[in-house]
Amino acid sequence: MTRLTSRFLVDLLLRRTESAGGFATVLAKGDEHSGIILVQCTERGQPGPLLERRFSATGHYIWEAVGPDDSKDGESRANYQDRRQKADPDLWIVELDIADAPRLVAEWAALT
Image (cartoon, rainbow, N blue to C red; front, side, top):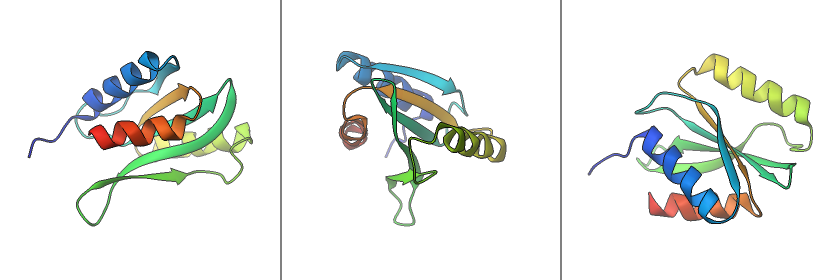
């Protein structure tokens, strides 16, 4: 089974978001091949959940909500992202600004 690179998956997510009428940008570029992907969901500038693509014990990738419980707390959200990036310099951080970004991520994940 061919494993898709992180760079390919991020590019696919960016294109998928833009084709659905949203805005997407890479806030932090991680390892091209195997970096973890963290998605910062936003809707019309209002923060939503942070979603992280992780490799599970079952051998499949899963998406989990991570970070502070209050997604509206911008400072604690930024602090969380800074800590994660310092602990894992291979981390990709992608921001999506689109209605119902978690749904778009779930649809995108089903394609990969």
